Length: 367
Ligand SMILES: [Zn+2]
Image (cartoon, protein in one colour):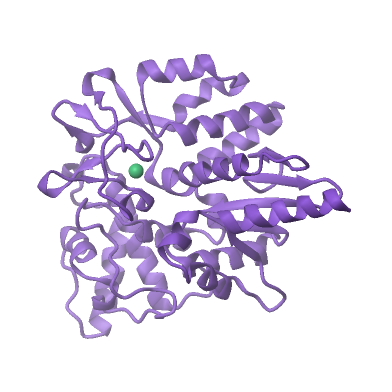
């Protein structure tokens, strides 16, 4: 973000490089010359280490090793302790892929409006739907994507057949690509029993789900396996899954929790910002942004930037419930970093928001 320190910006450059490396499906193709974003990160961290009299990573594989061997506090960077937990990593040690935190740092480094830029595909789809007058189909498409992190070719056709996607139908496939071998075990892919995201086999016959919600409680377990020969498709990039289709599941939960007399809810309006429009007629209308970030401080900073520069100040920001369940201080940190000179954005968790709307709707009934 624009007001970050030089060391924070360098962390952002490194995080972006690690995400770029992860997106190159076949790591054996990662040889010199490296993609510019990766080479730039290596050059900048090397120069920085020289200035700080620290030993630099000498190659891209060594930079990747730093990601899973060094917690942030061991990097030669001066990072604000109220934003970063110094015992956290950029690469997950069990799965060998960028952590949710790494994706957040990278996204914040690449844009000053993470909420709009998290999925350019989805922004393009919203534009197309608005142009073609396909508001209902757009909402259906978001619901389909929230429900199906993974599909077989056959299931994709069934989903297209059973959902009214209008003229957006031909674009559903754009959000999916063939799944990589890293998800394959014994001739099958194993979606998570909790969230449906394909699991990665981890050490000691355990499973790893990329969604932190699934890893925070009991052991991750697989649901019904998909046969590898069934042409399995995974949804979009990890960034899309983390920032769009994951939080969209929370948006659906909020919508079903507000199926109440006197409350009107619209999921994923195509015009204007917000994941939900919640209207208590005669009382209030909320434009709801649903968010699910690992780092409450980075989330707060991103909210402040969005409100400050892009005028989403009337939005209600609703945090996925599992975040506050895991950390009771989560909302307080978001609010502290989201606060600006001229006001404090409204930030609640799912239960807090739903309870507030319920109270307001009951109040309006009695008025
Ligand atoms: Zn899961």
